[in-house]
Image (cartoon, rainbow, N blue to C red; front, side, top):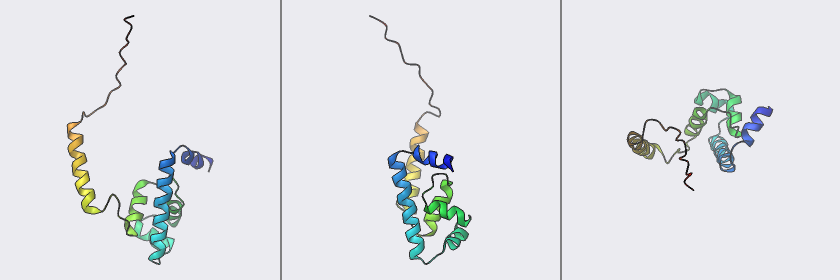
Length: 113
C-alpha cells in the first residue's frame, strides 16, 4: 500500500489532477448510465476491483484499462475517434522525420580562459 501511495506522490501536480479528473468523469458517466462497477468491469474486460481503482484515481492501473473504461462510458479521448486518427497520423509523420535514437551528448567543455 505504501508503494502505491509513493507512486502517486511522485507524480507532478498536473498529472495527479488529470488522473483525478478522468477518474471522476468515468465514475460520473458510469452512474449516469445506471451501470454498476461490475457492469463496467464486464464491458471493459477487467475486474470490479480494477474499476474501483480507476475511479479512485490510482496511478498504478494500466492505462489501457483506464482508456477502455472511459470509452465504454462514452468519454471522448483526445477529441474523439476522427481527431485521434488525424493526430496519430501527424505524430507518425513527425516521428519519421526525427532521429530513431536520441543519444547523450557530452557537453563541450569551454576551457579557453
